[in-house]
Amino acid sequence: MTVIVLAVLIWNHANPVDSRIYESDSLNYYKGHVTRVAEESLTGRDNEGARRLGYQKLEVHIDQGPLKGRKLMIDNDVTNTHHIICSKGTRVIVKVDSSPGVKPFYNIYNYDRTLGRILLLGVFAALLIVVAGHKGLRSLLGLAFAMVMILGFLLPALFHGYSPAVVTFITATVIIVSAMTLLNGWSRKTWVAVAATVLGMAVASAVYVVFSGIMYVNGYNLEAAEELILIRQKSGLSVSGLLFVSIAVSSLGALIDIAMSVVSALFEIWEQKPDIRSDELFRSGMNIGRDLAGANCQTLILAFTGSVITTLMVIISYGYQFNQLINADFISIELLGGMTAAIAVILTVPFSAFLTALAVRWSRRFFG
Image (cartoon, rainbow, N blue to C red):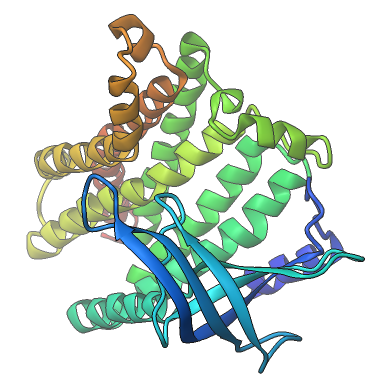
């Protein structure tokens, strides 16, 4: 894993990506904190009552960058879409627009959420380590490695124009192998779980290819398609393949989970009952996997559904007709994503059971 991370860093240094479609050199964002509220006029005018709208004039101390130490007076308009209400001590991000030849303009971009993010990640990591012990620590390491692979390899490779299917499969395979090896070491259990998960990924890819063609959806149907087309003009990005990348990455965790759950349970059964027949082990895997597949499929479908709740509310309020709604791009994309992941999860169960039974049979044949 260390070698791979170093290779990714060296590759990125040798192949830098500049796919910016807008120049933003004049814009900078700095941390600061409010030292004084000079003026304030806020009233509760929205329907919920709790949200106050109006205006503030703030004195902000800049805590970093070339303006560090300066105090600026900044006008802060509080609206429904920019509802940043500050008081003395509030930590904020200040947007500085310093275009050449123009007087610098300052405004409150957002709250500084750094502390909250650190605390949230800290609580997550602490609970995982306390509950799961050393395997929790290994899981954190595997998660960090997965983020490096996605942000450091997958995304730059896509910008460089490499095949989305190829780089996604490489990324997923490396993440699968590293995650499972961290949890269970380099053992027969790990090999079987890796093979089952990779087969599940292959199934997800095949399902996507078939049904994306039938449903006429690809990366060009994504909400950000227009921006992606502009990015493509400055890079080798394949817009059409990005939907597959998104679905594959989203389903990866569920596939790892179900493969490792079934395989671990079957290896435990084999250890407790060494004389169990391969066909009995396979049937046990199917019985175990049925419950796991049902729970994981519900999780996946609900997760995909939850991601479009607000969009559905807006569309329903617009009075969409049934045929108009059910054939909308975003519904087709979410349905394809959810069903692709669910089908892959379902078929990973027999893959895991069969490969475990096969591994047990081979172990007896070659090792007694």
